[in-house]
Length: 158
Image 1 (spheres, rainbow, N blue to C red):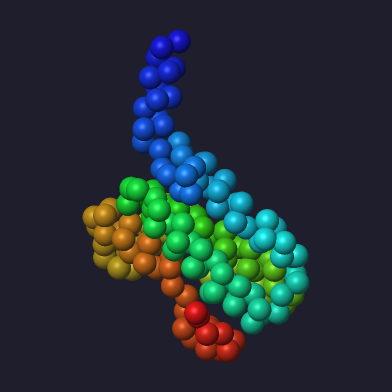
Image 2 (tube, rainbow, N blue to C red):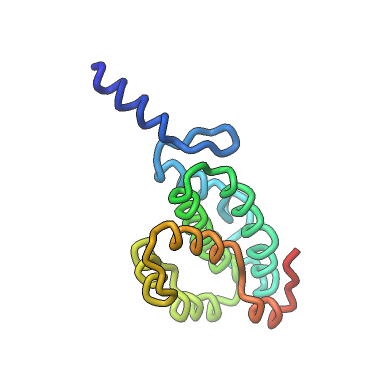
């Protein structure tokens, strides 16, 4: 019995703190990301124009990710949180788009990657080899949106 208590205590000690909530694992962090999803914000599937969907993504989801991500203590977990939050925001934005043809095109041309595939791509494209550099790049890359897409849709990040 005491082994379980020690193990549980050690897991809590390594947990992350966001808004006063202690995260024991990445799974719990992912649950928090889902709480910030499109459904939880009351945005119906296929209800937004491309411009409205982009504005919600750029001006609501990305700033929220930055705010919450900055509260995570370790660099690795912060990078994973940003990566997962952005993937969820991208999925939710595509789900909310009325223009299903465009949403499906985005799924084909700019698919949502797994963490492992992302790390592999960053190593290949950016030539980064140290995990610390990859984590920092992930946080930075997850926090921005493409200016060309914003400009095309007439969206101004706030």
